[in-house]
Length: 288
Image 1 (cartoon, rainbow, N blue to C red):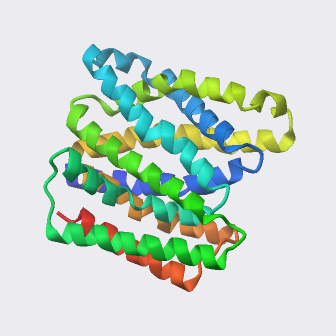
Image 2: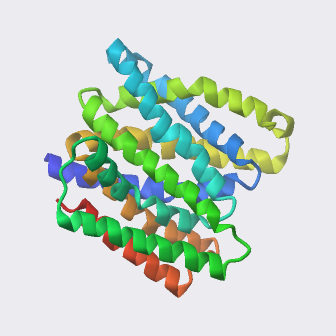
């Protein structure tokens, strides 16, 4: 099997895993607050990765640990809490659609800060993506007054963090194995995530039945949706390009949308148009 085939397989697996992550976050928030959820997600992932990849971190040169720490911050730590906070007020399917802006932000940040070359069609894609996002958020705010669409900005900030992360990995960590990068990332985050969990009040409610059910969902999210998925994602960046790797984000909403339907979520017709416009913008911005 050649590299071209492998990268498409990785892309499909990541879409399935990450597309299911948003409904898992929603289920986790039934018994957990966003800080507990984000912390547990990282702690479970860190434990899993330590079990399978602890030896791999010995291959990381000392001078590269600063990049491991920075990519840990932007690639998982900040987004883990931002997405959990966002889903306290907006639907999981909407959050997944906003997550599709990652390639757009990867392009913008790549051009501004990392010297990435771009085409006119990609700039057009950025503009179209912005129009679709505006339509999705403002129409949602009008038709879902019970939801606070200001929280959509948290999801958008998370995609900016992802864009920073992807460009940093491609520029500074491409020569490391995906397992060593992922394991290093989560070991760096383990202590701060544990501190936040301790002060979140989690240990005062741990014996409540709905909290335990939610912990089960976050265990799946941490191990599969975060640990395994990050290994696949870093490998995909290495065998392709940052922009190709982040195109997974316009497959994710398709998976998340079907989960949303099963969970009785819905988009207004105008929101659906906005979502489609976003995907067009992402396609154009990702086109080489």
